Length: 183
Image (cartoon, rainbow, N blue to C red; front, side, top):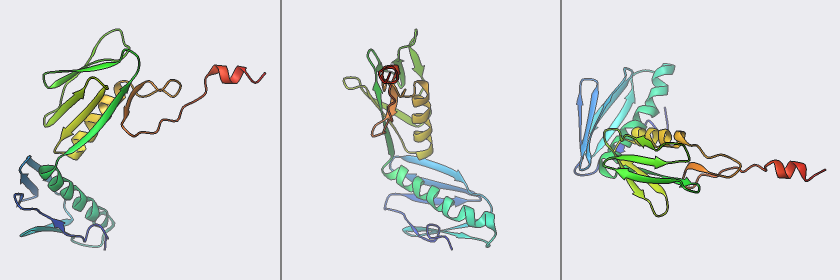
């Protein structure tokens, strides 16, 4: 039995879970999320809790057990609290500005870079310190959007310029000067 899969998911007051066929709908104060549930897992909705059980001990069913439980828990947390990831933009002349719901970034290219916000994602920009906060109720969408923004200009290891996650440890490399000073 999966240690994670057998734990019940606590559903706080104000959150409504409905199972319609193979789709689970979770509705809360911040919005509604829908997820298709694969075969091999059975979801039981009780007052104040949701339990996930597997139908057999097949390898694929065992693999899905803990995964589906965690995905449902992420849905419940998302509609109650939401998710946020923060990016730091480091570099001389690098700046980020909101343009409606979207972002306009100056990242050292010959042109400004426009980033369109996906549905359900909001951006908060601290232009004084060059921080961008990506917020939303879907954990996967928040993480993917943050990764897509970072991919535009990933941090480089020599000067440390680029877009990086707040708290990310960047391993710096010595440049040419360190190699030539040995001789």
